[in-house]
Image (cartoon, rainbow, N blue to C red):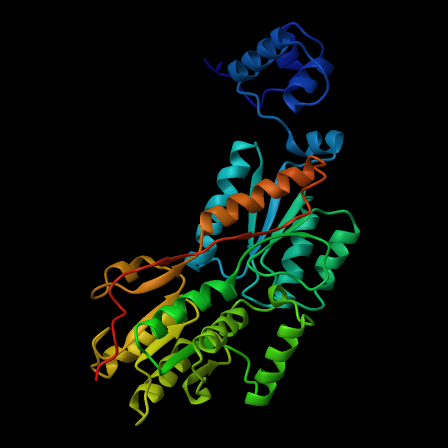
Length: 365
């Protein structure tokens, strides 16, 4: 039972109550150096009785560790990052580590500021969803300085850091192949893609096939677009680039407008693949605006499985990323790196699942 006392208990008082030296009490409470199990028990019981709270700053000065992990998320409001954070925090907590979460808003400048802030807080390592795939000087500098870094969702080209991703291209290929197998020959795609010309997209495909482009070092929507193209090529069905709705920014309003334009034309698609949760929500809203039915007049498969997709109409078939597992895996990699594990610097690719619901059927005649 904690004793009632004035002020904060000191380590000297804990040592006196336990009948040990101050240095021994410090080793036990700081979890460094040797002490017998009997001594450890005495010190911990005395600390609990006095309500002693260890000075983490002083402890870090001795051990060189703060037992904290810094996380930079792209958008902390997104369910995507919420799932990943749950996995990170669960594993970190079990290992006695704290987590400091920051937000980059998918901005390289804000990400750099966040990394600087976290390193100023003396975090032991960084888990980052990079917003920039090329330069990322702040991450390269952190790695050069010996800071363990684990990347999630995307990777910076050439960065010597661990990563946890999924095979976006293969998952998208599977989803679009399902629409083609259902009989659809005009399958549209809605994705946040830079505005490249058709010739530039063909050039990109050629670079990917030649092995000159690391697909993992691209924003996830690009590998998903490549999977869309792969599925058509494997089925022997030419891609109609008029069915490619490219949103330049993460804009729901623009996505909704582009879908409305796709579905109002004389040669509209009979099916649609959406490259992330925001695009799926925008597409469904546009379909509702036009008074069309899913899947009667438009089949749809979305990338990222969100809660509402189970309850909308007959349900939306969606690619589900193992978000909690991504976070757990990233945290375990970080702990391995902090423990000096030789195999910790790995690039792990986790499988995605296609959750089948009622949004796909054969195209209407």
